[in-house]
Length: 366
Image (cartoon, rainbow, N blue to C red):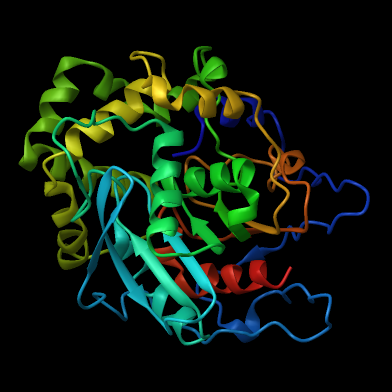
C-alpha cells in the first residue's frame, strides 16, 4: 500500500490543490471519474501524436467474469511463476500487477477488456501467492521492493517480452513504478494507482501523522509476535485479509465467492514469510538481502519516471493522498494524465474495471 511517509507529507494539502505542470508536459486531468462510467461517459482521453482517436471501452459490470481459465507456469529468475494470459499471442503486451491482500482476480474483468482490444495480457501471481513458488528451498524468502520488481523483469525475459505496458495497484503499482524508473527501456507506458509509491526507507524511519499511522495498524501488528503467529495460521490470516478488504474498500459489496477465489492464493506455503518480510523490511526491522542493495540505493534517491503515465487515485482508499495527485506529480517527467475515481476504494481494478482498463489504453496512447 502507499508509502506512509509520502502520505503524511501530503496530508497538509487541500483536496483542491493545483496539479504541478512542468513546462512542456501534458497537464494532469483533475476530473473525478464515476466508477461505473462507460467509455462514452469517461473524460476525453489523450489524443496521440498521430491524431487518431483513442479506443473507448464498453462498460463491464464488476464481477461479470469469475476466472481466467487454465493458468500457465514459467521458470523465471528464482521463481516458478504462475500467471494468467489473455488475448492474441502476438499482440502488444500489458502486464497487470496485483497487491496485498489480493491476487490476480483483481484483474478478472480488466483482462478481457484489454484482450478484446488486441492486447496480450499477462497477469502474474507475486512471489508467495497462488501458484508462484520458489525454485529452491534455499532461496531466502525475502520481499524487498526491488526483489519483487526484478521478479517481473525475469518474467518478461522468460516470456521474451522486450517491452510492455505496466499497470498495477498497491504492491503492483510500486513494482511498476520501480521498473519504469530503473529500467524505462522495458516500459512502453505506465498506469500507477495512488501515484509514485516507491518506498523511501530513510523517510519510513520518521513518525507520520497520527491518522496515517492508524491506517497502518496491520504493519505494526506484523512487526510483533502476535501478528506473526496470526499470519502463519492459515485460517487467521485469511480472516485478517478479509477484514482489510472491508476497511480499504468501504463501498465494495463483494460476496463470499469473490473473496474465496482470491483467498486460495493466500494458502501458498511462502505467503506468510513473504508478506511479513515486506512489511518488516519497510520499517527497518530487518536487513535487506545484499544482492538487492545496489537497486535499493538507486531507489533511495527517488528517481523520476519519464515514461508515459496515467495515475489513478481511488477517492475512498484511505491511502490516497489529498491534493489530486499534487504530492507526487513532480516525480513524473514524461507525458502524463491524472484521474481521481469517485466512490471507489483500494482495489480499484476489481471495483471499477472499465475505468482501470481505459486508463491502460489511454496511457498506451499518450
